[in-house]
Amino acid sequence: MTTPPIRLGVNIDHVATLRNARGSAYPDPVRAALVATEAGADGITAHLREDRRHIIDSDIDRLMDSLTIPLNFEMAATTEMQAIALRHRPHAVCLVPEKREERTTEGGLDVAGDDNRLAEFIAALTEAGSRVSLFIGHDPRQIEAAVRVRAPVIELHTGAYCDLVAEGKPEEAALELAALMQGARLAHSAGLEVHAGHGLSFATVSPFAAMAEIRELNIGHFLVSESVFMGLGPAIAEMRRLMDSARG
Image (cartoon, rainbow, N blue to C red):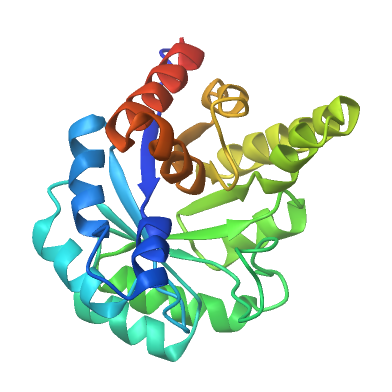
């Protein structure tokens, strides 16, 4: 059986972070999305946070009008965000935990502890035509809960593994990678489509791209950071090359 190709979703949030730091019109995250498209991205990810710290509502409006590849709309599972998603009906909606004080998304969504509410929340988005994914850890309880709430996709949180690699802790990193691999296999066997992301870089992407169960990786902060030195298009193209090489 041939392993399907792996998709690359490029997260443009931190292009907007840089723009908002000066309150100017640039750099434009929509322009970044178009560059990413040309460089080989299969989709664009944008997280509209409740505090609008990076992506803002008009960015979503323009992305929906401009993109020729799918938009993955990251959001908290709130009434406000659901209304925005139902109005725009993006290709995909990824539900993530969100706390005002965090710098970036910490940990995965607690699906097991909120499954009744999430089942209804997801059903409305699915009926509107959006593919819903849940950003979760590799805990089997959360994966099993994702099945119960009828989410077709999960995205595994790779941040802890990437942090352990950066901290020079290979043994702990290997254990975390093994747990993520086991989680991907469990989810795949349960009929879920498996994605992964958070903190991935040139140094950490290959093990996940090599996992046959994973269909998509979503990567943002590293690519925006690396673009300072090599340009956004070349950074995305190099990530695409590493992913395809690992996929074999």
